[in-house]
Image 1 (cartoon, rainbow over the protein chains, first blue to last red):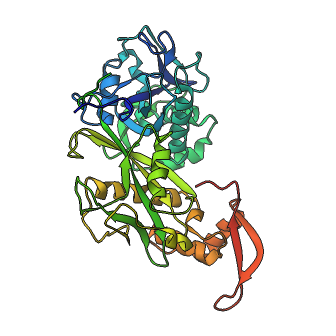
Image 2 (spheres, rainbow over the protein chains, first blue to last red):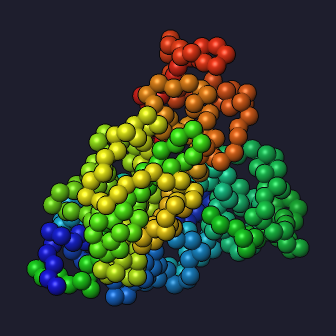
Length: 219
Length: 219
């Protein structure tokens, strides 16, 4: 069976991989090695390979595996971007995913098949992005914020063990505004997503208790 | 350029078109006329036509336009379903959309290119559905409920002018449980999505005021 470009759109995946440092929501950008739009900065992405991938999420995890050498806790779909003009190769569909990288795992990110790789401010990336990736990034940030604003804790962005202070900081960075400490702590007390550990780290004033995510937690 | 089935997945759209009557959340099902899975009941859907469609949402609106002879107020993406085994024709991507049909517009639905068409209980459809459409329907219902549970009013499911009683009824049908009348009314009073009209309909006890959706409302 012979198929023509007019009948079959190009199908690919793009990924907004987020991490949070003490002050900023960051996104991983890559400098494209190959045409189209070679040398331009972009979200990491790739074409679906039906002979390799068992689903679009599988394709997103495969593309990310080349750049991040750990198993990612969360890779979730945002939405599709599609049309005849977004890619010079023809009518194309990109399925946008977002993924969350824990705070202490950014050293697991390796450069592969791209000219360069960097962490950029997700709200104000330092480059004009290729294709419709600026819009994609905006939509992915909005989805992440909406989730956290709807009271889902961003536990996948934290190390395996964390203090409540770290959790509040990451939550505030994503939302872009400070939270009232006592009402945030009250909410955490009622949350089934946190497990108290009998471990402490030295804090500024007194030892801070450590917590981990409950196995049943889902973002 | 010659392309092979191994490189290009089949791309299509499926649509869960909802309406609400006084008691039930309903979804439109069609009986497929053509293979694969001819004679099986399914969500309406179709293959993307890059020479006709300008986006996947455009494809969904085109497919629906054959069956519903009005402009639909809301067609929104749910998520993708993909893989090598979900369609006998090969590796396929379906982008699932949901659409909302106002209560008083079900007569605008016409049968076209299918063996039969019916409104079925969205929570317990009267047929085993083709492909992975049972799972698609479950995911679409969950998305609709989550939106309404997050306090978005389901105004697109109501006639252009409606009473607060009708609004509460539609909201309760979607959520699957009754709402406290006075706290629901309080919430509506604070809502910017409703516009009071100087029009009334005869109610059981006294005339009921009519409302419409604000132009800025988005579901």
